[in-house]
Length: 262
Image 1 (spheres, rainbow, N blue to C red):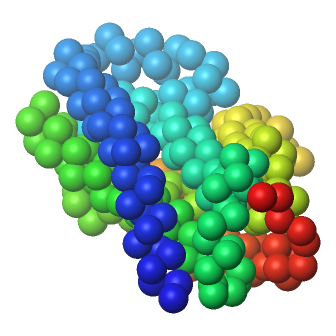
Image 2: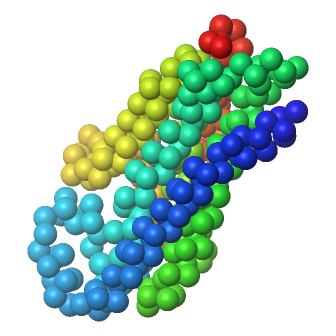
Image 3: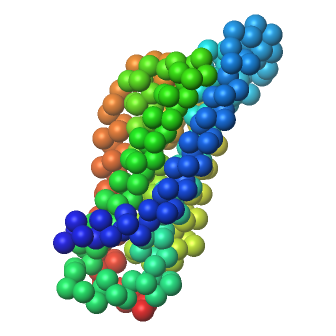
């Protein structure tokens, strides 16, 4: 029965997913279209080296190479966009529908609440994976078109780290929404924590106490470790996937035991 819930949720969310995919494709193509103007620009590299170290850590050190440019310009903002999508969708799938009175019909069916939650959790993960695939294809193709070829394997790992890091905060929003029925609280917690940790990771290298705890921040592995330029461990992918699932699993008893508004 969870399969029917999964397919129905994806069907209901197809327009939102489509517009997000189109927006992310435009974002990737526009940024990569600028790269030929910067490629091999020695003056730009000299300018970057003259910036404070904290600022270079945010925007990148080598914008004249494909990997450096994509890491510093395109991928640095992507966590914010993916986190917003994940938190908005996660909060809407249970709490948002409950507030609109749309949850009454599925709960009136002979469908356990745990099965409903499972199907919608898998739908959220599927939507994020679709966006990750769309980004991979668009960045890889646009990179070749605009003189910024990127290694497909490292690009795939980089986007997987970004996507599953965002999944963690989408799962948090879904879990809080299922447990409380309040979409505002859910999206605020998921998006606020996810984006806040992006900012925190950006300044962690300049603050010793934060740098010692950076391994706890999921965005470290997607941003600071530069997976597009270096070989990285795939262990965080499994950790974020399981941790997101654990958050929803922990919320399932609360969702099953509370009164749902019609």
